[in-house]
Length: 428
Image (cartoon, rainbow, N blue to C red; front, side, top):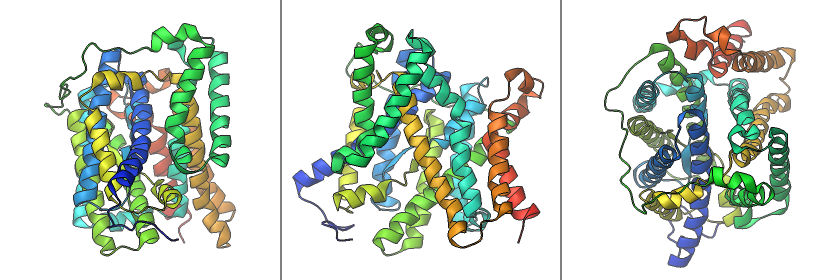
């Protein structure tokens, strides 16, 4: 593929700004969407949600800049990790300090694995079938959360209308993804978030007031509610450590995809530095009390559409995102997105992840190795994880408190199941 700008090329100022804004749109959309989901799970007041988004903007922008200057130094966009939502969902009922402490330790865990080279041994456990199951489990164990977003209980609108709107929005996004190109295609999530919100409020005007976030000040200090007193609960910590293993595999795959695409020098060093910095950023996320970041695997598609592999526009994008953090009123406007719209967009994103997971499964098909046993290795853990994700609360309440985050976490159960099947029951 012929590129207009290679990795170390510096585009002209105008091109840098335009391309940087395009990358920033991707980061902003994921920050708002995942931040809204966390807000719907365990943040009560809109002001708390805005403060959460402020810290999320700060951490994402700072991580992106640091990765490009001292980490992997590749044109990879960073953003909040959806897999960590699973740990948060399964840990409801515990204090926020417990969740934040687990994320802090999980980030250190990732950095140590990368710095010591231990992750090279753990990587061997994650075969194509295991990665397929991990990607599918993220989707299916988040299904109850996405369902609640689509229902939109707090909107005051009939849930049936809300679900219908969310499904139509998801199908519209797939249609637009087929026909659009350039910045319209790469910014589809953000444009759908804005356009979907406008259409939703035009159809259901009664819901507008309940989603309107206002803030009296333009500028606000956001280093509040920090994790100054760590609290460890073994069950919550184990749940998050499994999530961080999946996050690390995702991070590694994203960096490797750019290494294969651009063939830069010092590939192994870029991987090590990139994963270490991801771990440090996630430790910082626990201190700040927000979702930790990960490198997104969608970057090669953006590079292919823009013909620009330079890392400098992403530095501009990081600055854009970072500069939004002190302005709660601007973030409040971005946070007006209805949960129904977020649910529809998550259906689009998660369906894309199902496709990515199935691609790993089809690798065995192409190699002539996919058998009935392969179907069991993939199907049983996904089924088990899905069943556990929908267990009634009264069943989980019978377990000791410290074990509830593990026993009620379909993702953790599915990961243990697929590792057991792949490397013990059906070991070659």
